[in-house]
Length: 146
Image 1 (cartoon, helix red, strand yellow):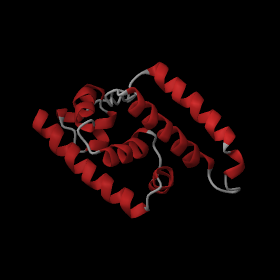
Image 2 (image 1 turned 135 degrees about the horizontal axis):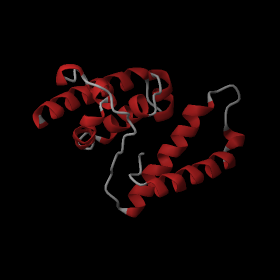
Image 3 (image 1 turned 45 degrees about the horizontal axis):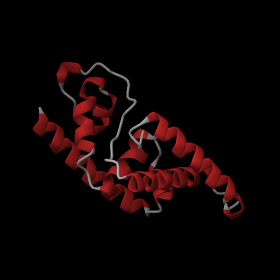
Image 4 (image 1 turned 60 degrees about the vertical axis):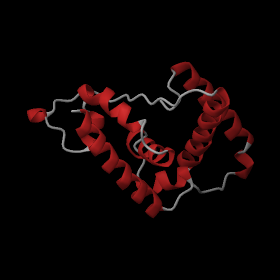
């Protein structure tokens, strides 16, 4: 959840669908719908958050998985480890906004690099570099918290 609250997320989704419907005439035929709709939804969530002056909070819906030997080897695996959820959330919230958005799209929404680039309006190389920096910062942050 990008908004930090389920009811806000429902409102954002509803408003995003209304805006998407209004802009349907501008949608390019043959283009993938998902990144376009996610971009509208992301913009709506950011606008709502800015207008309300709320603190940005991220909630993962990751399922708990068994972590062998208690060691989590990478940020990707941390997303799947339920016992590490709160630690990771604190770390994700310390990322720069662009890095945080890249992580959201890539790992929470499970978009591939091309879809993430399209949804965020960035080049694929930009997505890769921001993800790389974000994952490095997440790794460091999680290790500091242990």
